[in-house]
Image (cartoon, rainbow, N blue to C red; front, side, top):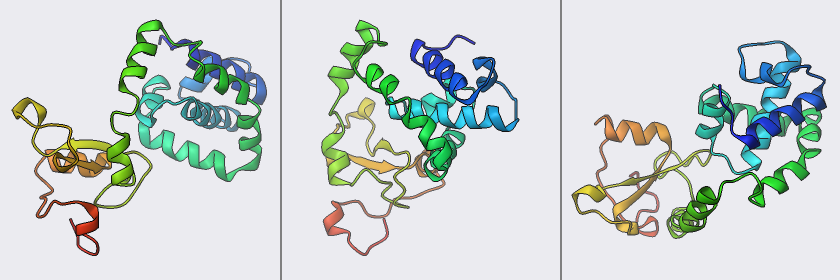
Length: 186
């Protein structure tokens, strides 16, 4: 499996910190305590570097729910959190674009802030269940059908409710600004 440079760097650093002889064990199916600790800390550090939960899952051959649980586990356990915090320099160097290609840097600069206004208006949480771990933007009227990125055409949903909506398992009865829908179920 080909890893991104930042991922490989994080895995090597975490493996050294926890005493793991081979960083590649972290991406495998090994379930011993040391490897599990290293995997959780790696996921947490990658999240701090700005990776989405789904991107972390793809990089480490796991799903996004595993990445969410791992990040929560690191926050709960002081021993794991101290390992993650000791890698703060690695996180800072990644955020400074040193690991990103020029094309990626350009794309990030162009896309940064695209959804900021929407996330502020809707508090960056699912408008149905109020979860804020992972949220996605849903276009009520798709852009390919003439929809736009204006707030009245967008919903912030967790991946579960987003999928349910696309599969027709969820129906939206009323849409409006959050201040008009206080106390009402969407």
